[in-house]
Amino acid sequence: MVANQRCDTGLEAVERLIREKDGTLVKRDRTEIERDIATYTIIEHDGVIFGCAALYPYPEAKTAEMAAVTVSPQSQGTGDGEKLLKRIEQRARLLGLDSIFVLTTRTMHWFIKRGFQPVDPDWLPDARKRKYNWDRKSQVLVKKL
Image 1: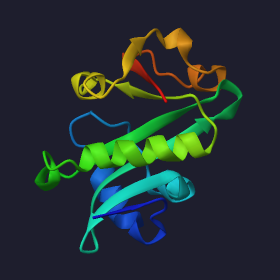
Image 2 (image 1 turned 90 degrees about the vertical axis):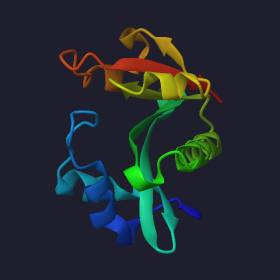
Image 3 (image 1 turned 30 degrees about the horizontal axis):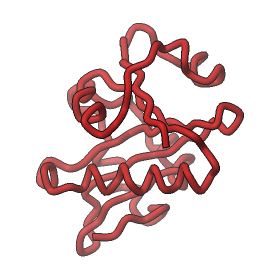
Image 4 (image 1 turned 120 degrees about the vertical axis):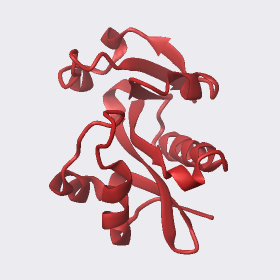
């Protein structure tokens, strides 16, 4: 298992992993993924990418959003999600951040079991609050580092 900070060669794999299927993840087109590929951390086994997550820092608020968190169905339950979370936490600490947050509509329990706490959407950094989709009704969860 390798947790890479960047996955420049894995653009297609990341795109396939986060492709909209059931409304869990926010839709991202190829251009957006390509633009943001340096923000992704991946989990791979024997050259096959099984999971990814992006980290979007908000340094003025000393926090970052962990987004597009996904692990392939065949890898779920193997600890890859925890490995991704640990690597994202490590990256956020290296950036001098105090917390990370996620917006979720369906997997709140997974994050709460790993130390995230629910907060009001008004907690979000101003730049992120302006982009918050109120129709989606995502829960905002924060983890102190």
